Image (tube, rainbow, N blue to C red):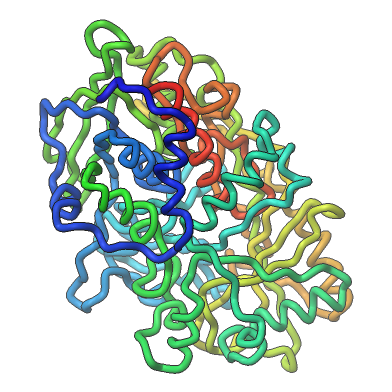
Length: 539
């Protein structure tokens, strides 16, 4: 790695010209070749980024633009090759081996319909969605180059300014809202549905019913930005392009229309010619190389096959390591490294402050005159805001069964105060999370401030057939894991790990458990802030 200094002003000048357009240049041939070359045993790299989600993608791009050669290691697949059906990703209603990470049976977040289980057997494979089970909770995470951007609904929400002090109290809000949130939104290609089209298309009838019910109960109904290409969606509806969001694609990947990190940050990073990606590679250990942290780090990496078996173990060295394996992946790895003596000087805050972003799900049974439509876009575009009064924001979510259900479905984000910790179980050889299912009760209570009122107004009831038999609340999961290496506690104010110069956390593990909205724009903006400071001060 070059030790030449780079000024904050120089870094901004070098990157600012990229911020004006969301459209991406295609990677160069040399960049594509670099992306295809896996890391070799014995390699030395200037910067190793562990994980290719939002934080890792930001770090890879900005480091590369600053002249640093970056190797990005991703546990999941590259997801760049179509299957026998000609598609890279499978459909939500017809999951196959591509759907789940190393499972032999699907585990859908909504896993019952009319009281009957709907999960099915599949072939074990390194699929795109990981339903990782811990005590008391299942955490859904993306697996592949692009991380969570591959499997989320793309809802790109900037938190309200008045809520920011509760999210990241040690971060300058003025800088975030003037510089880093706008930068993140531009780079991610965030846009909003055309309200006129929303009002006319059959595919958002379910959301219009949600709007009517929210407004009749006095709740603000808001359009929510997304990273889906809304022009493409309108062409889907017109039948001029292949359908994706309008063909039930969301949970297990999206073949067209969605601006995942593969098409935004990662495409630009690869186009620099300074970023190499190794898919199906998992970091097992990081420890100081001879001479301590100033001498770089020894990293042990396991290469996987598509059945999850380790087919090679490689030892490499890196001048700097950026942990970006997601809240769960980063937290588990750091807890392991501290407990096993690889990085014993990590502080006692590592593993703590983990939360579920207050996620809880529910459905409502509407009257027959409030049909929600057999055709539904899988991309949510609106929500019900009762955060200030009741501590809940609810996405009006699709229920794309292909038939009329007369059901309204919601994913709520709530102000749940409960936080869990990861701890190393030496006997079992794994990191474990101490979450308790009962800790979801505050989320249920907050969500009820919206839906009890709507049900009373509309004369409707909760659905009790979507998460089991006579079970109203989806209180068993989260889509939005946050925390475990909290900024200013486990790290300094920019993600540096104390006692280990050259080690950084740059993902959702930095955020203490809640963002009040869907978190990926905040993760991206925080990563932009932190990597800018790191490049200016450390390189």
